[in-house]
Image 1: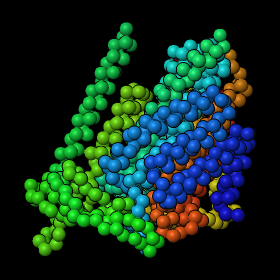
Image 2: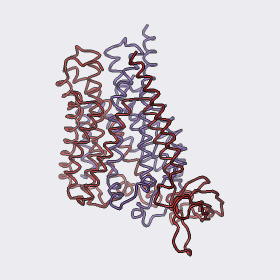
Image 3: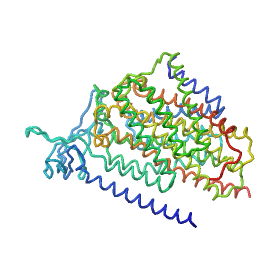
Image 4: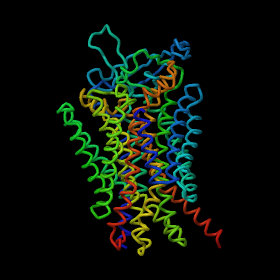
Length: 254
Length: 370
């Protein structure tokens, strides 16, 4: 058996052990998301517009990630609505920025990997860059919205009569607690994976000016910044959706 | 009342910082003097012709040619204008169309017989604008916590840079110990800045280190048992040092932030819960922790998975359109990201029981209100 299969089995076992049924479905969501991601590339390579593909695949990825990992219906529903709102907001920012900054495709640093490849494939790489940016933010958005919604619903379970105002304060408070480390998840997730590139930049004595205008570096930093924006917006939006939901539920009970 | 005035001041200070930031973004339009490279502004563009192309895999594309008139903004040729021919394709993998108003880097050869060429787009203004937008949102919504988060990321970036310099100076010889120590410093520093130095921070730190450490041990055992079959180190990009240690360090650093994130989420929620319900027992706390962990582990693993995978998009697409089959395309582009995601996932799952257990046993009876 190869390493990926064994690591996958270990992860599956641990997720079931710790998470029970929720763990198993969360693992399933990972597999589905991989399938969706690959499907997105295949669809774009077949000539479907990148924008449409990212919207449709993004909506489905959010659904799989949130509903398969969360067994509390209130938290999941709230998180999903909030995540969709944030995703649409981000697309409105990402689309014009990617067309302005033109950090798409490949750079001279990629030359070795591109040897013998035809680059004139007739698919707009700016569109691909938009797709990359949108899909890479989805995980962070889903995670933040789930964390806030799950925390708030725990409070609602233990304190059914909690007021909207108190709930809002708690939501922002949880948000403030998680924002610092969420930043670090993104920072390490993006830049930890680009250690090799940074060693390349430093080793070949790139000037500060060439680094901040470098295609690969800019594309990478953009993805971090878009994810950050997504997470920041997720905090008040999730709390807001939860407050409305809770007020609605209280009214139904009366 | 005093607090009210402070909040008032905080608000105006934030607005001031945001406005100064925006001015800073504007200044990058006139920073050509700071560059070592020659910077020019595109004053006029004129399309010349377009032609349809087709490659050996029957991919249809279009090639355009345009005249780009540029005015030099710095260095010895300042003020001069040049007319440069630019060729670009519709797909734009390595080239691009230039528009009036763009600032570009140009190379002016010292001998007059060779042509002036455009080296690439100057992207600093757009980048600064996006960074400004993110920071403005952060400060306006998160205020002080946002500032602390920013500080921790900045400090981590400085440490990261220093570690790379040390790694280069030692030629990658001590990469494991270097980045291992760095990972510990990262965790302590980040959690200290985000949570403050208190019991909650110590609990979170313990869970982070245990989770990451266990994930590394388990992965190394799996690597040894499977002889790393299917881990294509040769497909790693931008490699200038021995790939295997580099890959392992990338994986540890990549997962560290996520494990820290999750431990913080769980511990913070549990402390919050205790504040809401002071009479809750240790076992209930543990169960609540597992419950919270269950719901965030899936999304969190997906965060890293999507980050690791999105990077491979352009290259994967290129492989597919160059007549490679799905299996080969996956192996060459996505398998390393997959291994990274799985190892991170293992760390994330293991941190849940550790964090819940530590929180339930080490939490004080009364959590002081914040």
